[in-house]
Length: 118
Image (cartoon, rainbow, N blue to C red; front, top):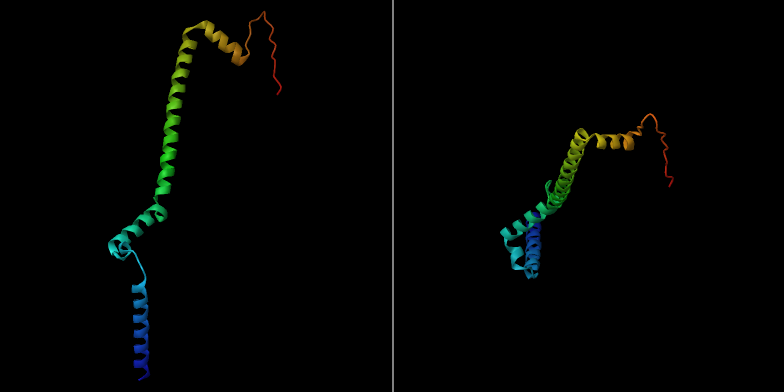
C-alpha cells in the first residue's frame, strides 16, 4: 500500500515539474529536436572536435605563411643562381668575391681588416 502511495507521489512530482517546464517561455526553435540537434552539432564542430574550426583557422594561417616563405625562397634561389652564374663566367667578379668574403690578397698587397665594435 505504501508503494502505491509513493508511485502516486512520484507521478504527481513529475507532472508538477512537467507543468512548470511547460509554463516557461522557451523559444520555439529550441523545442524543435532537429534545430536543437543541429545547434549541438555546430557547437561540437566549432569547439570540441579534433578538427574544430579554431584549429582549421590556425592551419590555414600557417599554410599562408609557408606559401609566402616559399615565394621568398624561390626569389632568393633565382638571385643566388644568377650570382653563381656571374661568378663562374666573370673572373673579375670571382676575384672581388674572394677578396670580400675570404680575405684573399695578391702577393704584393697588404690586407687590413677593420672590425666595427657596436
